[in-house]
Image (cartoon, rainbow, N blue to C red):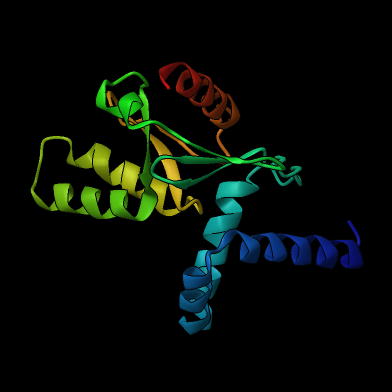
Length: 165
């Protein structure tokens, strides 16, 4: 690969890295020392491009916008009926990722038996850029925008919601 091609690739990776950050993360990033910025960027590259190939970004069809709302791209926002959660009709609930992170940190500090598992979840969830994600009510499984099963999970929840009204 020629020098110009490497620079173009590096610029694209850095652009994607910056786009993956929320506004508050961008402010934090800019306040860090150069060394801390490099560590954060390298961590991002290792997580996203370990095979050293540029992957196409997944087309966004759905967006979780609140604990009970799914925005359908180019259409409307669907409000999930409370009954779906109250009657435990769906395995996944929509949760605020930041709130979940705080909850996990609290549980970890309580020295629970699942501390290592929760620390792994915390580490993984800190890298997720979504404000809202799906969290399983039965396991420690999380589904977010970049997950392979995200669209399918949104579609199942929307269909289920139609039957509960």
